[in-house]
Image (cartoon, rainbow, N blue to C red; front, side):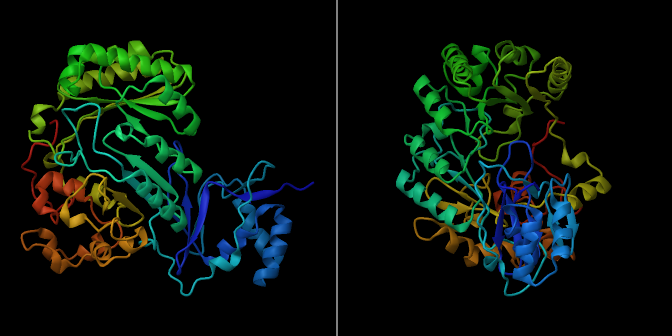
Amino acid sequence: MDKQYIFNPRYILRNELDKVIILMKPDPVIPSSICVLHPIYAMILCFVDGCTIKEASMKASEYLGISKQNITEILKPLINNEGVIEGYESVFPENTLIEYQNEMKKRGYNPDDFHCSSLDLKLSRLKAPADIICNITMKCYTDCMYCYADRHGHLNYKMSPEKICNIIDEAYNLGVVSFKLMGGDIFQYKEWEIILEKLKSYGYNPCLSTKYPLKEKDVCKLKEILDDKIPLQISLDTLIPKNIQSILHVKGEQYKDDIISFIELLEKYEVNYIIHTVLNLYNDTVEDVKSIEDHITNRKFLQEWFVDSAKCSMYLPYDYSYYKPSKENVIKIASYLENLSKSMDSFKIHIPKIVKNHNKIDQEKKSRIFNSRVSCSGNVSSMYILPDGKVTICEELYWHPHFIIGDLNLNSIEEIWNSPKAHSLFYLNQSDISKDSPCSICKDFKDCHSYKHVCWRDVILAYGSNNWDSPDPFCPLAPPILKDISME
């Protein structure tokens, strides 16, 4: 009997009116991307829905008036394809078609839904967001001395669980494939269970991060709700009590005991998790790293240990020099962890890096980095919801007034996404740029801002909130950074 196939359940087809795109549900291992398809290919894929290639080709042939042989020749290379396949201005991701299993839910796509009124097969701003991040609270259990969040004056901002659930409803109906949660610490939002249950009902499985040592009943609830494929992130910087107190401003001994108990509960209830350590002035020693290592070696459900150097925050009342780690100490820690990782089979260790000095990078290398930069998804395929319902384009810009594109207390997601403010930020006019910025007279302005844009977070970090329209720090025309934001 011939094998039956299905369009990969991880992928979502969406009609953008002048093209069809393939969106990808988040995966902890496989990176996500957006692929453009000619509408004809999307219609053909609709027929591969738990049947043989022969059956799919026959149905597609009847619908489109294309020979069965031609359709079969299109479909066969897409079966378990190991890499991306490109052709006819279309891109097919790996494993576009996979073998159908009885327990799989059929896709139920209708080819009539993928007719386009015009055709433009270039990747462009989406007609609705594909990814949404919702910050449900700015409250935290700790008070980290390297905090990256804009918490001052915003701690009591909160939307009701009913409001957040309504937002999730609309996101799902718009075809949003990823709905993530951020904070603060989401477990400081009293009704967090309601929000997670709602997300689960739509198949959204956000990766959660916390410094809060949850109790047993909460761990049991998480076990019910969480997808085993998406690990919980525990932010853990050290287990030396005096350093805990200096970094987090909590009682060191008590926090150490509580967080170890929390990890043991995760092991008891078989909850997959990762650990994230941020090196700073108070824990940049091998001794601090070993304090964590001693309590996580041989854990069964720990999957990865990420160790990073603290970066400069845009929202603290003191300079980076107050908390940044020593370059020499980070190098020692990196060496120690590299050796440790060679003998560590149970989980993967990610080695920390030095925060480089932009001013020391030569122009040729800057140009190479800048031209190969990854496209920013903000206001292209994603949006960020703040805890008071305001909407911005990036999780690190918070309430910066220039980047607020709407308010969900007044308008819908769709209205905000298609608002004049959102469009004006994407289709930025050179005439809107300050005369003090090199961008105001740059001949490459249009190409630079046409799709990739720049990282406005990096721009503001380097040059200040009022200079949001300065060049990206990696741009060869960028002025020197006068602020201390590196470890060199």
